[in-house]
View 1 (tube, rainbow, N blue to C red):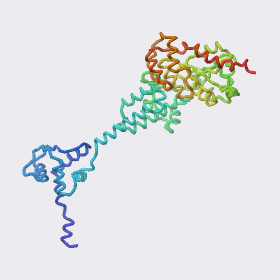
View 2: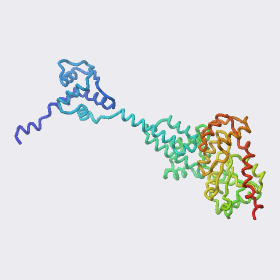
View 3: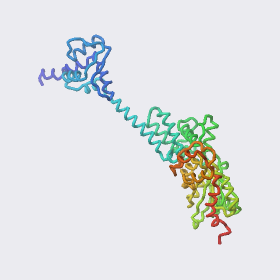
View 4: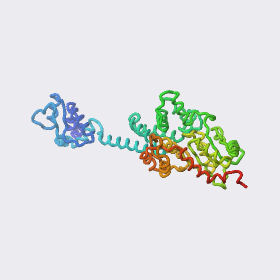
Length: 430
C-alpha cells in the first residue's frame, strides 16, 4: 500500500466531520425527536440558536446569510444537504449521532391496543360472564387503570384474582393455606393489604352488594362469608328428603331425618368427610334446590317422610351448601335450582349455577311473567343484573319493576315436587 493510499484511508471524511460539529447537535436532537414521533414531518422548528449554531446551520445548508435564531428548516432541504455531504439519509445520520429512532405514535397505538385487549379479555372472562354482577367489578378495575402503567402486570394480577374467585367458596381453610393451594404455593399472596387481596375483596363486595370493607374485621367477615377462614361447624346447609344409602355419617344423619319427615342441618364437617354413601340409581334422582328455608318447611309439612330430596341454600350458599351440591352431582344427582325473582336472587342463582352443575328450575322469563300476573304488587326488585341462563329475564324484571319472592310461588314449586314425592316415600317401596 502506498503512502498516499494510507493517508486517504486514515483521513476523516470531511462530510462526516461537518455533520458531527457540536454546533449542529441541537439540530440533530430536534430532528430525532420529530422523526421519533411517528407522525409525518416536513419542517423542523429550531431554536433559539446562538450565533455559532446559526453559522453551522448556514454552512450545512449552503445559505448566503445567517438564519433566524428560531429558524424553520424544510426536511427536504436538510435531506439534500446531508446526502450531498455523506451519501446517507437524515434518518441514518440522526440515528448514528443521537441514537435509534423511535415511533411514539406507533407505541401509543400499541399500548392503546394492549389496554383495549386487556379490558375486553376481563369483560369476556368465563368467571365474569357466569356471574354478570362482576361486570361492575371489571368496570371498576378498568376505571382504576393499569397497575404501574403496565398492561402485563395488570393482567397477571387480574388472572390471579379470577383464579381465586373461581375457587370460592373455600373449604374452611385458613387464608394462607387457601392462598398456597390456589396460587402455586404463594401462602401470603392474600395477606391483608396486598394488591391481590384488595382486588378480590372488592369483587366479593360487588358480588354481595356491600361496600368495600374498610376495617380488618370487615375484611375477615367477607373472607369468612366466602368460605375462607371459616370453621367446619358454623357453615351449615339444610336438607330434607335426602335418603342416601351407605354407612357414612352423612348418609345416616340425612336418612334418619328424612324418614322422620324432618330437615337435617349438615355441617361442613359432615360434607367434607361424608363417608360411604350412594344415591338410588334406579330412580335417576333429581335433587331440587331452593333459596329460602320456608320452602323446605312447606315441603316437609306437606310431604313429611315422603318429601323428595330438597336442599336449601338459605340465601347466599356457603361452603357447606356448595360442597354438598357438588358431591350429590358427583353421585349422579341432577340438580335443579330455584330462588327469588329479585336482583339478589338472580345473582345468587347465577352463583349457584356457576359453582355447581345445577340447572334452573322455573327461573325463566316465562315463569317470571306468570308469577307477576299472580302477584303484580310486589316490592321493587333492587339492582338487576343479567341472568346468564335467560337473557330476557333481566329485561322483563326491569320492565315490570316487581320482585316475586320464592314464597309467592311455593304452590307451583310444591306441585312440581309432588310428582316425585310418591316414589320417594318409604311406605311406597316394596
